[in-house]
Amino acid sequence: MVEFENQRPLAGFHPVIDLASGETAGWEVLARSRDRDLIGLALAARGAVRTGCFLSVRLPAREIEDAFVRRRLCDARRLDGLALILCGELSRDGRCLLEDARERGALVGCDTAAALVHFTALGPDLLSLPEPGAAAGHDPAATGAVAVLAAMAARVGARVIAHDVTTPSVAAALGGLGVALGQGTAFGLPSPRLPAAHGSPNRPRLARAGWPWAKRLEETLPCLPAASSIAAIVDLCLDDEGHEWVVLVDDRSRPVRLVERNALVRGEPFEHRAIPVLPAMPLEGVAQAAADRPVGGRSRPLVLCDAAGRYRGLLMPAALPAQG
Image (cartoon, rainbow, N blue to C red; front, side, top):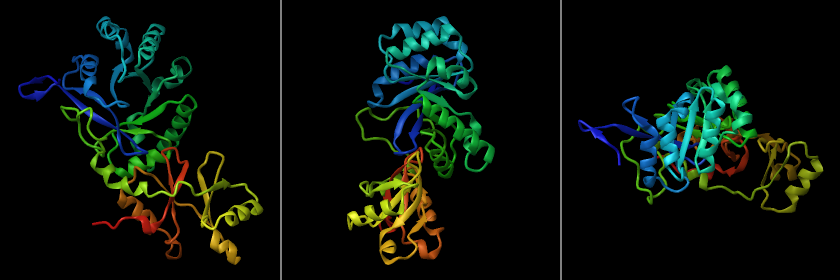
């Protein structure tokens, strides 16, 4: 239950979106007053959170050792559904408190300022990007930094979360760099209440507009390593007449080229550029990616990738629903 003061909510819940599926992965607990008990608010609201989602709290690292915060965490027998993201460098005692919280079901995370210090010792579940992460895809320096941090997080199984995501194009760029979670005005503003715990999965308006087309996948279409021999490609194309397209991928399963079976059989140029799209992209962005190709290539499929850029399936232009 959220407290109110003068008919204004003392706390709000800002959705955190899975950039690959477009669904809500959790909410960050925010408060109007800096001295509000964020952990207490999060613990009290856990009953309204669907299974598999989390409520996150961002705190300065020094506050995890505060006697009041320590008591809040210790009084709760289980901490499932709570995500603690600490900003700044933790002390040894702070790490011990977080490790104890994790053993009782909490997710733990840190920001990039402390990442290099804590990744080995803490092995966080979440890595919080700084606000400049929103410039990824436009600023080469920011793009490179996000890609490096996402790769570092992947090594320990952490999910990267970007804040202040303002547009669908920024969300798509971040997803392509390996960022798993996003939060910002592109997905909605903080709400004083959480949706019902047993309701349908919550998809924000922008993501909901783009997600249905991603269900039109041919997930069984094959792929081969990009270094495969011509003989291996021919064998796969001729193995089944249904293999009209074969995707060639690199050692990280990222699409490199498309092989067109009919062109190969006719002795014509059969390798084409792979145009990747992401499930989190709105339909308008997918249509633009299809339209930006040369006229002769617009009948070729687009390659659907997950948030890390890995091949998932092919999207045929005919499968795109008409835009109203």
